[in-house]
Length: 456
Image (cartoon, one colour):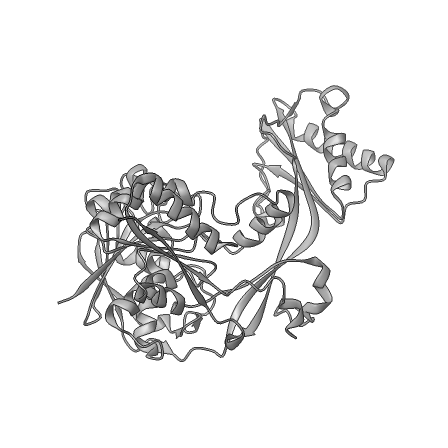
């Protein structure tokens, strides 16, 4: 019986490097999949390109990751699927061709899946924001980026065209796994129950080691062995639709019914209606069975509903600038000195005329996470960090925060410490606000562009 094994190499751009090599060496996989995005990834990348036009539009970790595995993947016939193309999947594909030549790979076919970036035209499509119902055209001057979550169709087409490596822009994360499954087993994307099964598989493993114990671990309550060597997951699917989730052999972590349940519900608003580009999935129809140590069977029968006529788009809007500073205090009276510093800075802001759009004060270690919901403590902290962050309209306004905080080293409260960094570059960063809209799917067809290494 035909079986396909998919290895989950990364959950996001800055995930660990080792799992890809481990999956390739010991996972007996057919596909190596790299998820490289979060929701804000492309907006941040676009903002960075505004500061540096020469900055590549694809994942900066793409080349170092591929350099470790590309030659061995080609030798073993393991195909690579990744959404590392970000703003420039064609540029990413061309860079991988260059890398292949540098590595002496004599034949490689790389596919770029394009079509979902709408930055230049989304304001003219007559669309509205989901969040407030306002026309997107009203925010035309603020638009930094606009991109659609595309489905698995482009990945399937790229594999049909013989791609060894498939590089996409934004797609539904789980589509990195649905694509090869639909290609290998000949699934029709209109068969929504089969597609739903593929999306369940993808959703379980798209976040890498989260399904094998990462972010599940809670010492003394949910113990996970050897987190430092946690093994990334492998999804095995056969032609009859049986699904097994496991992990790299002889690695740390754990794959259990509980880890699968937690990951299934991760980032899900309505488990009965999980909207994906190619299908709507009913997660209430999904069950799990532990079949052996670190091996779980996934049962997802009749879990699909027809896909929607629209696709979700993310629109990043420029919303000014953020400046952040940290001031450190230790010893008796640390909290009272931090509070006095807050009052001092507020007075200085009045003197220099700084009027930020928003300002936030945190006492790290006391109330920075749960804010007003933090329980009152009778303990007096021995050390405290005062954090102040401001949102401004202009970069110049944002720079005023540092100009006021730096002098506290000599004209502030006793026993003050100043957070500092030796890193180059500005302490100011642009704010990109994330918004969403629904786009008719016929407005965003995909296209597959092939780049090749062909040596005789």
